[in-house]
Image (tube, rainbow, N blue to C red; front, side):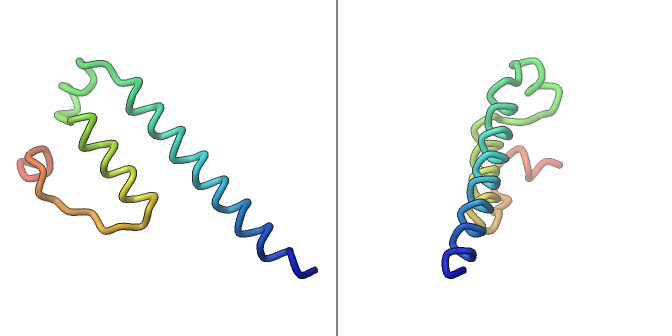
Length: 68
C-alpha cells in the first residue's frame, strides 16, 4: 500500500506527542515542595522535555544542572 509508510509515521508521531504531553502534565503536577526536594525548576524541566522530544541537544548551562 502506498500510504502505509505515511500512516506508520503519523502513528509514531502521535505516540511521541502523547508521551510528551503526559510528561508535561507530570511536571506541571509537581508541587513546590516536590520541586524543592528535587532541587529542580519546573521551567528548566519543561524546556529539557521539549528539547528531548524535538530532538535538539541538551545544553547544561542552567544553575540546577551546574551544581550537581
